[in-house]
Structures are given as C-alpha cells and as structure tokens.
Length: 189
View 1 (cartoon, rainbow, N blue to C red):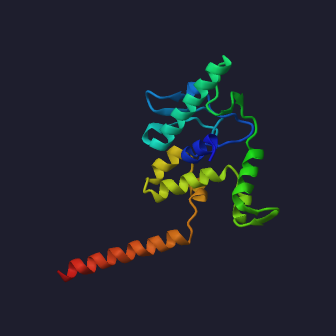
View 2 (cartoon, rainbow, N blue to C red):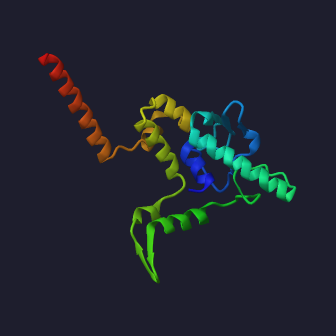
View 3 (cartoon, one colour):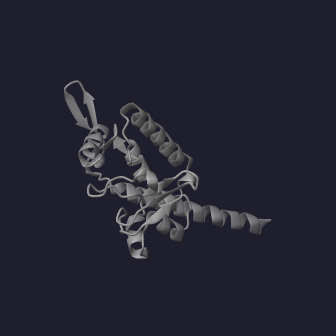
C-alpha cells in the first residue's frame, strides 16, 4: 500500500482530490501528533491524531520524512507536503487508486486476465475511513473515542460506518456462549 493510502487507512483521513495531503508543519514528531486542519477532514472540522501511539504510523511518517529529506538534498528544493511523488505534489490519487485496485483484483496469465476479486474494483479511497472505524470498534476502542479519532460528530453517521457483518454476529454469539459456559462452570463449583 502506498504511503498516502496507508496514512489514510491508519488515521481515517479523507483523500479527496480537492484537498491536498498534509504538510510537514502539521506533523509534530516531539508531541507525536498530526494536526488535521479545518477543511481537510470529512466533517470539515480540524482535529489532532496521536500517531505516536501507533508504531506502524510513526514508522511510516519517519520513513516518509527520511525519503523527503533525501529528495530535498538531491534537488535543493523544500518539499512542504508529507506525501508527494519525488517532490511533486499529489494532485489526484484517483487514477492511481483505480489502477492499483485493478492490479489487486485481476490475475494475469500471459495475455489472459481473470477478475479474481471483483469487490476490489468497486472500492473507493473513502472506504479506508470505514475500515478505520471497523478496526477501532473490533479492537475494543470505545465508540466515543473512535468517533473522536475518526472525526465523526454524530452517532448516526458513525453507525453508518460501523457496519456489522456475519463475522461480527458470529463473534457476538461466541462471546455470549463463552460467558454462559463460564457462568455454568462457576455455578457447578
């Protein structure tokens, strides 16, 4: 996964073509936070995201900073954006998003192509926000905290992102079953 997509996946950050990726002045390595400016989030409200709590996100940002500094040294130019293409701003991710989705969905054998994961062809960058919500909830993060991290202002909208599927239902039944078995075992003693 490319760095900008991974950042979006880990933070729930929105990647619209009209809003450019964050700039280095918004990344505070000392405090371990990224400031998402007003207007760069789905709700339009600004917020901070504590990246230091995620080793994967901290590592991603550190690697990107190292990469950026190397290009700055080579070109003599200052690169203000966290995510870029060899120093040039990313203005549109949708073309690359769709080609990456196609590569992941299609198996090639010589001249033949077979779509093996058709659902990937329908994915959009905003799906990463939904994934972030589901990962937070499945990890046991309180819904209030998850809403703050993902920038959801209302419970109704948050619930639209927190989609329950068959695995969630099965996990719920398994938890209740384990609970009842533990209670029955405790009662038998």
